[in-house]
Amino acid sequence: MLESLLPEITLLIADYLPHPAVAVASLVCRSWRSRTIAILFRSVSLTSDSHITRFSHTIGNRADSPFSISQHIRSLAISSLRYDSITESGLASLVSCTSHLVQLRELRWELSFVPNNVKVLELFQAQCHQLELVALLVPKKLESGGTLGEYLCPMLKSPKFDNLVEFQLRMQYTPLYFDTDTSDPLNKMLANCPKLQSLRIHIVDCTGHITLFHINHLIASFDAELTLPFLRKLHILGDIGMTRESLMPSETGSPNFRGFLARYTHIEELCLDCVFLYDPPSDNPEHLAGALPSLKRFCGPDFICNILVRSSLAKQLECLSIQPVEVGPGKAFTPGGEYAILPLPKLKELDVRNLDCEDVFIILPMLLPVAPELETLAIESMYADEYATFLELFQYTPKLRQMSAFNLALKFDRSDPLHVTSRWVTKRGIEPLFEQMKEMCPQLVFTKPWVGSMMLDRENAKMMH
View 1: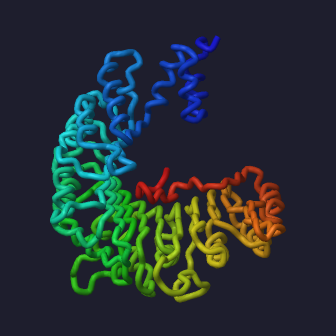
View 2: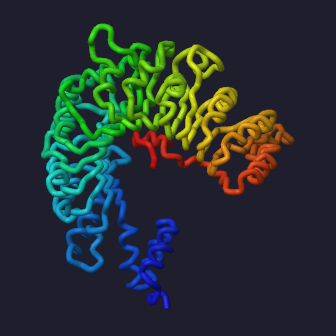
View 3: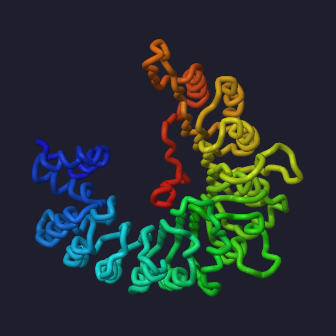
């Protein structure tokens, strides 16, 4: 009976099941196995030599089998969780199977060491012609006397990725090592990616000190003649400092971040999850807006968001993820001011979940009344005395369909002074608030984790979609 189910129905059921359940379903019968194999092996993660050995053996010995998995693999991650979990000899086993991964779209190369023999990575570049995304992790442990460029160069100078549309580079090292030895091979690779649409750079300072690495230093390392005509997404994350002058036209003519943005006027999505060190600019908002004429989605510090919603870009913003400033004074969003907040007619998603509750209820009364098309809202929490205020604001967003709010509170039981216990309980009064909102908008859905398109995945330095 199970074998008689239509393939479409089987796949529909499997898509709703967690991965372990799909694995069990594949054992029901031969027919189900053939239908679920594509789901089971769509994404593969190799985290040890033993994983690689079994994977290579399976790929090589079953290349012509009806149950061959190689044609179904779209994403492959090679990641060493411990320093010795993947070794040089383990990587060598991959040489025999790269030619079978003809449908591979994503490659994540996240090793704790740079192999002496980079033949495997070169084979991925040469034989996996459908690769669209490559993510590289630069290890934090460098050999004595070595430069970061010497480690990057053999990994980036290989044959170009003709179809690459997204490149991610994550560095765990002292940012001061980022020099021409690093930037030259990086520039060469970017120049050999004619279709690149998304660039994400994540730098983590492993010294534990306050960063001295300025974003203008990073931008200056890019070749001034480098052109990425299809670049639409730019994400810069980690221990990188930015000053007021980074966002203003350079008075000296030296390279700065605003000048870099002005060269790529087609950028639609910008994420700046950096360290901000100085006062926010008070200049005309159009000075920054002029460098981002195509911007639709932004994730970054509150003071830049404050500039954007007061500029001509407000009319085209679709997603805004407001992050707190890690190092810097004062409140960015304050009522009034020389430049008023403009209507946000296209804003669909608003994320303020990383802000303090006090800041949230400064920002929401300023933004919700001018964002009638808002569909998704993420906030961290709210106090009981703010429920009525929020309910009033909710009337401005009749199209809101998804909302997340942390609605739990930690309750301590001190009845036994020697054994104090705690548990999470639902905040008093928030459930009636949700019920009132549901009455006003029956289609509204409440979620715990927000799944909006600008949600940061800091580990992989990317935004989730």
